[in-house]
Image 1: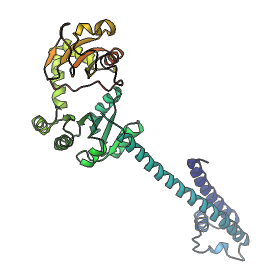
Image 2: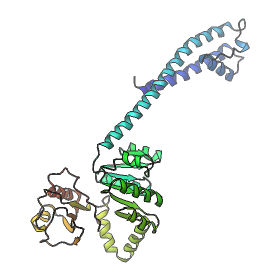
Image 3: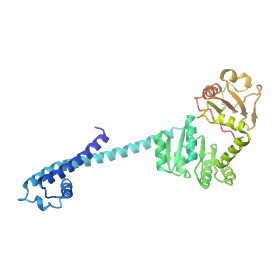
Image 4: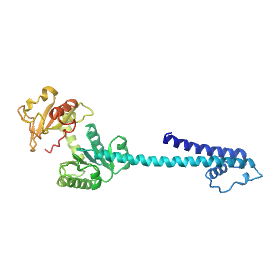
Length: 351
């Protein structure tokens, strides 16, 4: 019988036993109040035995004493069974919890090239949703138990702890990670996370959240590759919508995947790519995939906007393209056919 069902049976047995005892004493000894019947039943089945009420005494109601003997025999067995079930349930719960944690750590330890999201508040949740939408591997670090449980129920990998702690970051696999987002609500915490993460992994791509404008410069100095201020970004976006509505509509069209099929993506040209040393027109991107390449970031850091058909693609470049999700996936496969789908995409753009 499943543990949950055994637990329900045990609780039901106790309730039924107490009900039978209370009603039985009331029928056998009508002068006993209902609560006294219940109380005497309770101390009888639990073998506490403070003493019997005068109404049940020998010579006054012998039938009540026989009923008490019956109740003791049945009660001891029932209580013993319930204690056994409760202990087993607790043991299995602890075992499942331990196994669940071990499995989670095993899953995290198997990750390479993943992202780490520090903080799962309002901003962090949006980031998590976007990364999950792109089918990228990631680990979330948050101290809130309710948030952690919610994310775990959604199937995400979560570590409960302080993101500023070296051991927590190490447990999230920071040495093997591809990028980190410091998205907690405190600028000092984001600063410390950035400093710690950069010290632990020199090649890590770090995006940090800044609540105050003055924190942006400090976060960049601490080692963040990019710093985003939600308030400033929101204000700029509102201004663009007001002053340049057509431009704002285009950017929304290219970035809001939940509402439109069009997406903006980037693909890194890795070693062994058939695109290396080929002009853009020779790749067949436009004819085969109907994808528009709007920029190419050179591996040296230069950015070429609206590249011509004669632009030669070099190893380590990152192509920024617009198209449907399916066509962009096809572009990634064409650019890096030797790599597993999803691993070559999203080279960070510093320019």
